[in-house]
Structure formats: structure tokens, C-alpha cells
Length: 252
Length: 252
DNA sequence: CGAGCTGTTGATCTGCATCAAGGTCTGTGG
DNA sequence: CCACAGACCTTGATGCAGATCAACAGCTCG
Image (cartoon, rainbow over all chains, first blue to last red; front, side, top):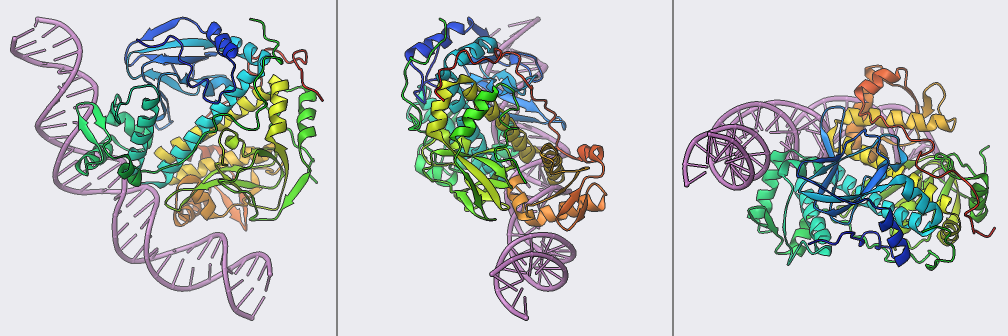
């Protein structure tokens, strides 16, 4: 049902040629499936790979010395998993399947060779890492400075946007495949408080829940409550030289 | 008194040749000085540059809709400033001089051309961005999950390490050129509470203060209190192909 | 030599954590 | 098809870390 090699995240800054994308796809390993709760890669592992999430939802997290878990990111299909760990010896985060998932491994050795041969690939990864950094800054600000209700509203709005891009949110309705406890670990709250806030959003008519489905009937009203970072990515950074293959030395 | 083009951050993953570094230095603008409190670049500005911090301390911050300020990073000499904004149209963060500073502008157009010509430069920036992302994750975890005292201890330990690298901390003593209010905005606390926690660290003998100087007499005891992320960067990622100039097409 | 930062301290308040106990749903094996 | 275990959600009572409010003191710099 899903495409075998989703590229919308790779293409988002449109600095890759069709050739670049197909070079990346050629170094990708086979599609591997994992059941719910499977750990795709554990924190601390010496794993020189990143993964392309083909289908399903994945959590990236690590545990603190206190034993508490911090969830770093909820990954959706098309996302690159584990790329932060490329600058360290042992993996920073654990990757855990939230639903049954399909991933494809990208060996860092091959990716490194590709980057050296085709600078636009390194540039695309750089821009994408910067984008993730901004998302992290926004969440830091939300956790540091805004109340629980606003954080949850922010999360729901952001998730809705990202799901809409991949056709998993229709008319602002989607399946919320994350528990309230996980939401708490993502936003720095206890599951008890997440529950109370969700009920309040429900009571106030800002969200409509049934079973694990969520509907956001009034985005503007929800935005009024939320911690809103308004950012527009530049589809094509003006400062980047135009795409061309002339500088490539990569072997196919 | 300071070198005109500090490169320790550029070289930290040792994937750049001496040539690469000198290419970067050649696109850098002249050293520009700013007084304390000067805004080097404001949030929202359409500024297609990054800056190399040559001397002095700089804060990166943005303001939330609520009017509160989130400080994202305390930058020290050698740091690249404003690089997150390369993937957006309007600058994400404001860069404010905490002390009198010297910076050199790196036009993104020139840096883009350099990256396209020399893939190792794009790779070095990618690794450095990933490192910053990890630092942000650690701070997110600290703000979300650890008490005020631990966050402040973590900040002091980290700052001491970074200052030691550039010779601004001797025997774990350094000048703390940031106000308690700014520390609060960095760690998600009020200045009142920062004050109380600093006094407590002082009272407990974990830090020794006089005027704006801080001494950390017992790192281990301070670490026992702190939120400690123990991470080792890989000096030279094993998966990167060895350095060489053969793939370069960059014009000098 | 006074104005405005910055640091310090006390009193009080509150958002969220903690503790505790049910209730509901889901999948599984008998 | 039912029983039942475990995961998940819900709700109440209570506690506390850190916010807020309010002074005031020391320092720095124009």
C-alpha cells in the first residue's frame, strides 16, 4: 500500500536531482519490517547506519540518569531516523516502533561515499538537519516556557500538518497512535496531567475524540491556545547555486 | 590578543583539509566589532549569512508569542552563529552580544558555492549541526525532566569544559559573563529561582563565587548533582572516506 | 552622584507532580 | 465464545518545586 522509497523529506529543499535521489535509493538495504514495540536500534549501540522510515510511526528517545525517558521525536513515514548519531561513536537515541513499521537501512559508509562524490547530497542532509534543529528549539521553548495545555495543542497541530502531507490526516482527523504516557515523555509532563489536559481540550470543543481518533474541528481556535512557532521553510534556498550534475564525480 | 580566524570548531571532526579551511577563511568578511548588547542580527531578518564568532560571547535567542524570551545557545569564540537559519527565509534567532565581540560574516552564497565545490565542507557543517542538535536534545531533556539545581550544575560544567578548550577557564575558574536572568531564560527558570539555586550551590561548597568569577572546586561532586549527558564525539567518524582533494572542483 | 541594572531575600500562590483507586479496552488462551 | 490479564484511560486528594509579587541593597557607568 505504501511506496517502497518515500522521498518527500529528501526533496523538501529541492536541491537534489532525480539522479541524486536514485543514487541514495540504490545504497538503501531491503525493506525490513518490525512489529509494534520493536527496538529498531538501541541507544548506545555501535551502529553505523541511518534508516529511512518507509511506513509506520517510530519514537526516538533516550533515558536520563534518573531513569526517566525523554522522547525526542515522533517520526512519520519519509523521515530519516537516527541521523544525529552520525557524529558520535555510540548511538544517542533508541528507535522504537510505535506501530508495525517498515524501514530501510542506509549504511553510513555508503552515504559518506555518496556525500563526498555528490555535494548536493551532503547539502540536502545539512538543510534537513537544520530543520530538525529548529523543531527542537521550538519544543524546547514550549517545554521551558508554556503551560501544559499549550504544549499539547501545539503537538496536535504539528502532527496534523505532518500527517496531512502523507495523506494520513483527512479533514483534520487522524488516528493518534501514541499513548498519553508517551505524549507526556515527549512534552515533559506526567501521563496524569496529559489526560486532564486532553479532557479539557475535549470539554472545550477544541478537539473531538472517539476511540483513538482525533478530530480538530477549529484549527484557529486551537492555535489560539497553542504555543505557535510560525516558520516557513524556504523551498529552495536562494543562496544555493542552481542544481546541476556537472560537479559530480560520484560513480554509480 | 585573539586569532583572527579561530578554526577549532571547524576542525573538530577532522574532515577538512588545510586547503578547505583556508578556502572558508577566504570567503569570510572583515572582522567586525560590536559593543555589549548589540544585536548582530535580529530574529526575522532576511540575512543570508552565517557568522564566525572570533572573540567575545554571544546569545542566540527568540521570543515567543507570549513575549517571553527563550535563549537557545550561549556561543563562545570559534562557534558558527546563525547557521540554523540557512533553511528558512527569515532568521529564526537573534544574535546578541553579551560582551564586546568580534565576528566575521560568511555570505551564504559563497558558502553554498564552496559546499557544492568541496563536499567535505558540506559534510563538516553537517556533522557540526548534528552535534548542536544533540546538545539541544540534552538541554530539552534537562528542562523537561530535571530540577532547577541540576540544570544549573549542568550548565556550569558544560560551560567550564567549553571555556577550557579556548583557554578561558583555568583550574576550573572562569568569568561568568551572563546575568542570572539570562541563565533563567536559557534553562526555563525565573531569575529569582536561579538566584536561590546559585546561593545553594555556593552554600554547599559546590561553587565558589567572587564578583563575576566562578570556581568549581570539585567537579565530581558537582556532576553528582547535575543532569549529566555523557557523550563522546567521534573525532573522525569511521564511516567517512579518507580526506583527499581529488574530488574537488572548487575554484580558488 | 543618581539612574538603572543586577543580585538578594521574604511571603505567598499555583500548575503540575505524586499517590491512589477504579474503569475500559484489547488481545489471548482456554 | 468467554474469561481474564495487562495496557491504557480516568478521576480524586494532597503535596511541592518553582512562579509571582514585593522590597531593598550593591554595583556600574554615564
